Image (cartoon, rainbow, N blue to C red; front, side, top):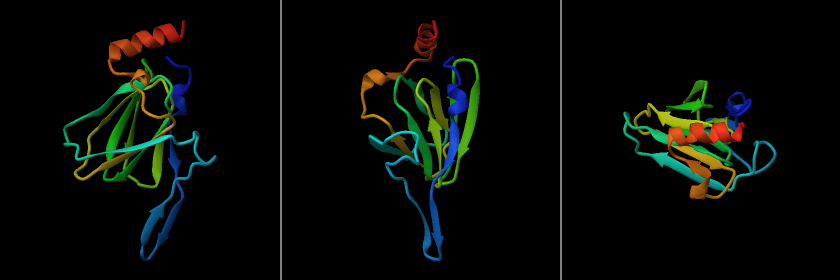
Length: 141
């Protein structure tokens, strides 16, 4: 287990501006986030029974948001699992490096918006759960 990493997962409330013309939420690359943003991507058109993620990051930090609709994010540290339901576009789930994550139960029309601390490198990903458990054993020994 990566010490206390699962406890660091938390929902962050983002600035929300509401008026009679609608709502706006902003995310700035400043000290209001636990990391500087180096990459942004979004996931959409996910069938309701499909799962996304199924990996861990060695170094990348993420902030995952439901820009539209809702979905669950299941986070595992190799021993314990927590599930966060994202459904508010003004909240983001902070996910530290070293945790296994799965996204599931996507509602129709949902959009997952993900802010990441680093540019994409395949070497940062652990895509097999057994490899992830091995990674944890070596990291913690």
